[in-house]
Image (cartoon, rainbow, N blue to C red):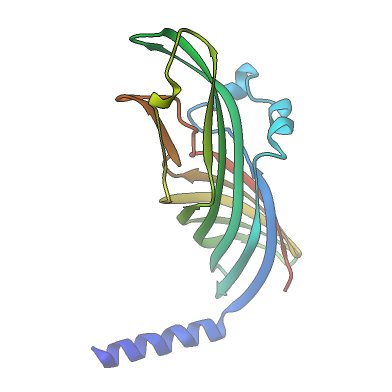
Length: 221
């Protein structure tokens, strides 16, 4: 068993020694657009004004490395700081207070660690087109949830149960294009909601975590 382990380590070390290594910085936009609300593109619910309203409140930034194996396959780990801020209304019927409408404020702050495996679909001298997928680790970094009553009867706000997860595991898939030292990616996150809110056993509206992400990276070397 030890011999097998030693051989595996040597082969892995040899592979990394032969691999091409890039390191860079990146930043991007976390949209609120998901597959579940994609119809809002056609009915006008999600448009350029939506992007402009979110751009400073929904973003990520960080670092990435890219290890190329041969001419086609690469491994890309990333370390990203990500925030999403949302404000929307939730309406429900309470058994005692009647119809209640609340303002819900969600400030989601996380550290994300995607571990992506990619393949070059088209490799030119100054540009290439890529596809990639891999697991994504997400860690809570001070997220918060707040509610304000807009209308309704005498509702006890303390009955709202809030649960923000410390960590999650999801999947990220996407495609990208490299032009010289720039790397543009479009991705879709497949990950569970970071938080849940309940009144008794009834779930209030959750912030969708399965969303599209756009990022631009610069390979420093």
